[in-house]
Length: 187
Image 1 (cartoon, rainbow, N blue to C red):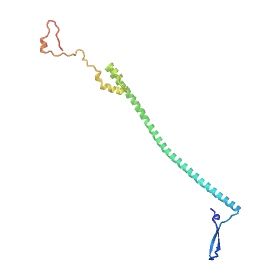
Image 2 (cartoon, rainbow, N blue to C red):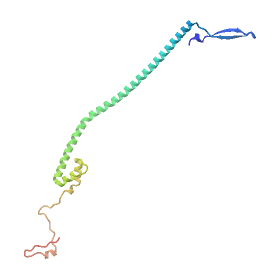
Image 3 (cartoon, rainbow, N blue to C red):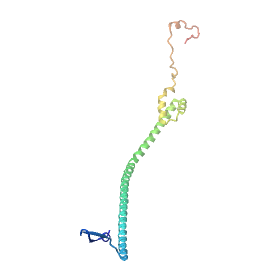
Image 4 (tube, rainbow, N blue to C red):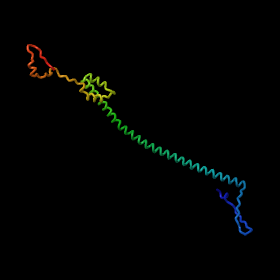
């Protein structure tokens, strides 16, 4: 505030009883023109104070926005670096994936051929049994199942002419037919 508003005049008055002097306080009185001029100056000072405070606030807000933007860009650059790293790794692994996919396809072809050959060798019962497997297993699972159960589909037939006879015991020798009779064989 202005010194003029807080300024007060003091007068010394004599006390009739003791002769001591006391300061007397009276307010300063301004003319209407002076008061209008003081009000104008005060208004201008207040307006300048508000404008300075607003500029300071706007500056702080702008600074906060810039800091937030800088932090976002920094974070985004880190994500961008991470994304670039992952992209480079993906490009590096793509040929390996293609090679492995080609190998898997080749192996599936070989397994399918093995299964078909084994089914053909074991016959129609094996083919029907594989078709009836529950859950529609893949080719490898069918081949494993067939290998584990291969004995179920093999028939044990002795080749023609290699049939064996039981040895003849003494009792059977005595019962040998004579004169074109057929022998009696007991099982």
